[in-house]
Length: 321
Image 1 (cartoon, helix red, strand yellow):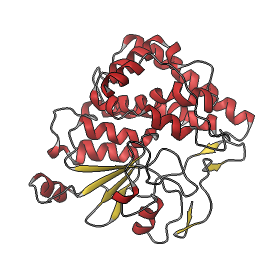
Image 2 (cartoon, one colour):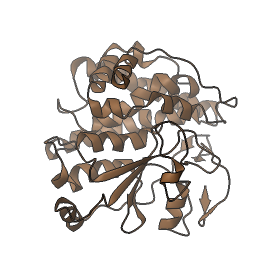
Image 3 (tube, one colour):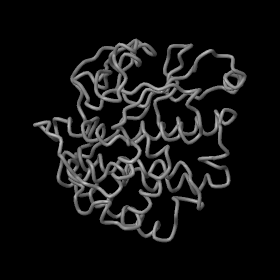
Image 4 (cartoon, one colour):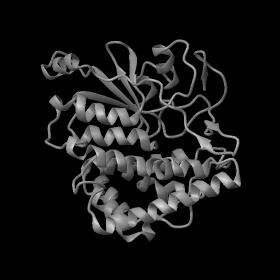
């Protein structure tokens, strides 16, 4: 991580822990929005190239949230993208030669942490993705995926090429409630289980993960979407965890009571979302597996498992063909 702008030690998956050994996630440091006058300039074609840039990792569920929203809302011409390698180096996220990653030769930096010190020379903390970058200011706008979802949906509405609204005002209380109901127990719950530093912390997180999955199975047995009978940001937030569950969390994070394939309604829901190009095209199975299984603290040999074979793989394979 960075301490006063200097990289002090090799990357460590355990960010913080409490006295009971619970995994604690670092809060995002940059929380700005895109001003209305800048959006107006973007809509008027004032910039010869995209002013804003998104730095992401396909392995990362938080970063993939923003990629899916960018695609759903048709923001590709306004928000350019760079993709880091899936394997985390001793210096954190980096650019390199992994397939479908952005080559280092195409970038002005080698490591994501360099963007943080360009923005704040004295920055202390972890250098995470996603990063929404302002090319004109050469600074980070925002590194919180939940904020970036709202920036894309709300701040950039004038640039959308679709009528889709991922956080409609009428559904906002319900959307926020659903998001809150899955964040701690599932989105972050799998990490709390995988990086727990005590048996008690692990069992607490493990139980919450499967209590939530059982509740969601009941929900999707009667509902097609997370809230309001329509596609919203809540579906994006849930999808990125579900798609990684059988690939990585079930084995590597020891959340192995059941797989998503053991939940019929959740499996059907996952397949329905994968029929949508924005979800399918931003899901890179090889990046997900290579990235998670490169975490030496959990997988010292670095061996990436050959499986599993999953029913929804055919949808991803059809797209590749």
